[in-house]
Image (cartoon, rainbow over all chains, first blue to last red; front, side, top):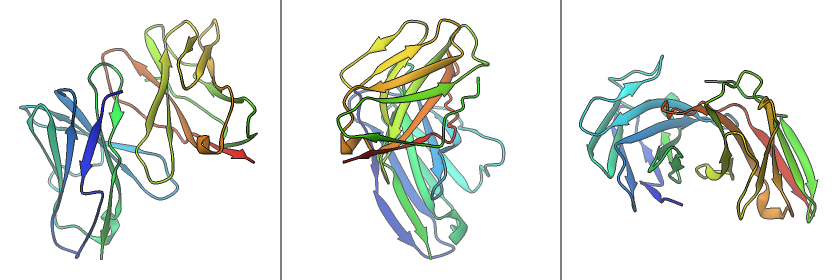
Length: 113
Length: 110
């Protein structure tokens, strides 16, 4: 299957700082990528759809000014958590699709102190 | 997108077949059924998908009922490494958005 990577795999930051997470499709081009968030013992929740060359589409209830998404190339999407707070601590996962099937990255665990 | 419902948890003996059911009673004619699994602290892994016909690959088999209101994922010879949360997702062709349900926590017992 297609390979999607994320960087970093984990990050710890202080409250009020911003954190950038990268999502790359390694062996295919992706005009669309997706960002999910997962809290402990819960399912994945779709946050936004990242579109290459255009604005991201956010799901209801997700603050677009807090979770900035940039999809600057066909293999890279970034999620920036701005002014992070402890309640933003979570497991962030991206996915990309070479066809109708989505392939997921390994996830990034964010801990905000 | 159709909603899917799955049992919360299941146990299976190692070496036996694991049969994981999924109900998607509101599925429409052009909606695919996808199965993924998530091992603790990892991203979901694609297993298999189908529309109408039964499907088989190196990982599993997918049996879809004739009315398409339910399906069953079959892991023919479960191993301890198959312990994971299994998600059944239905997807309308062209929408691409996945809505995850709660999934089934499968525990394979030695």
